[in-house]
Image 1 (spheres, one colour):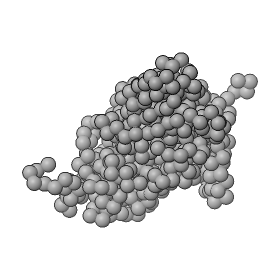
Image 2 (tube, rainbow, N blue to C red; image 1 turned 90 degrees about the horizontal axis):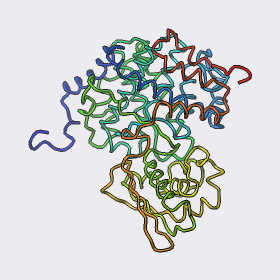
Image 3 (cartoon, helix red, strand yellow; image 1 turned 180 degrees about the vertical axis):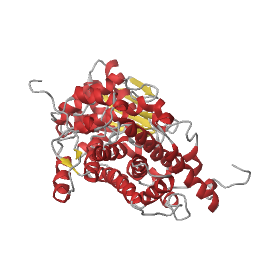
Image 4 (cartoon, rainbow, N blue to C red; image 1 turned 30 degrees about the vertical axis):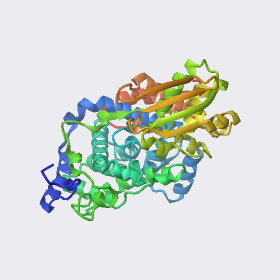
Length: 464
């Protein structure tokens, strides 16, 4: 920043500079090839494998079934699979349903700098479009990596103010990633990719207030579908303002607090945001994972003697408290509750899908322990860290601090962990798709000439 330059002045660019900023992102996407992103192919496969794991876990959830019932009477030619199910829909509708399914359990991947869940809004339309048009695995991986880069870079530019204002950043930025990825998959030139992103800016929506309800997933589904729609419109000649994101009345100014547009281009083409992707071991908001890990450690220290606990204090950042210091009325509340995460980890020694189900949420012993948990601000802790203290009836106090939760970049899930997550998700979702077939196809994705072999409803052989 130059001397005497006001904070946030990076958002107040001249018209020519703004145009340059807009074209830099789309020019890079248009020019990038498999050779540019091949080094990140393994991480892309891990993310897509995790996408299948979470979508399979929700494949027959009532929310997914309701979405199918709503869309099916109006759907076009059935070109694309609904993950884990027999039904097929047109690519736009399949994008919507599969993105909902992948995001439903709060078990999807996370870009920690922005708290964007990158795969659901990008992988869903890319795979649906690739199946409909017959694209190769390398085409899919290239488009996916670039789409994730775009959504997270735009998220970087408006973080953290955008989320704090109440915008659900996975939805609002995911639409840009979906548009860029689908435009790349369609082979559009830079100017049409720019139009696709500009069209996406007019379809960006999603609010944090709806996180404890199914409406949260509607905005994630819309991000996937609307991003694909934006690319298809651009392919047909639709145009948008070249300053749709960074203009004085553009998306960034309207939806962010003092956006830092320069952050969109830090290391552009040299580093990729997918390298910062993480995968959840627990189906809860990412900021609660350190709480769970700390409580597991404390449970071991008291040898599971929950009756000895008089009180539990969870300390963390303002984001942790804003997201999780809430009453628990249902399973969606539970997935974003400090109190429920602590109670399950301490009482049950587990934090899987069952522990966040309605049956567990309603258990009297869990509810009673939730009442003994209080949340306090500790401004010294970064987002994603937690300090948990037990006050025992004996008067003794025990404390654990977790700075890097399991699943973070410092303690990542292994390939085998993600494969196990997929197998467990398939059982949970009640699907008859073939786990071994999906896992094998994802790891070989860059060799597939047509991705239909991955997503055309692979079934388990009879007798398995």
